[in-house]
Length: 87
Image (cartoon, rainbow, N blue to C red; front, side, top):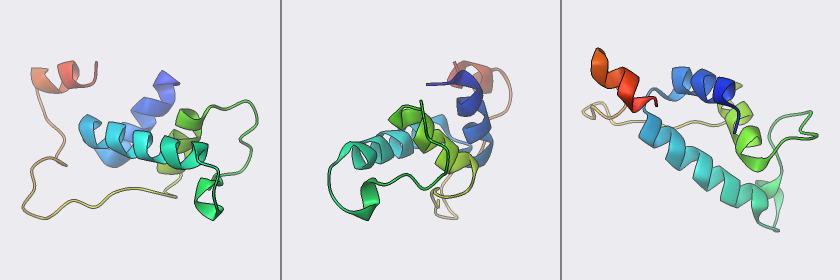
């Protein structure tokens, strides 16, 4: 998984835990053998792994998630906690 793509995707998703869940779900879909759900939503996927394809889809706005208005889990953390959460 490309670290630059992860940082770009975090700008879209805001929560690293949600990002991990999105990527893992999409990787399972891409690796499955059935139907249109297993096709990449972005062009030029040559030499990319499933996780990088999922990251490109998030960055390009082809997929994402919605958070309830009352949820704090989608709010970017500020301060020293944010740096540790991003790795």
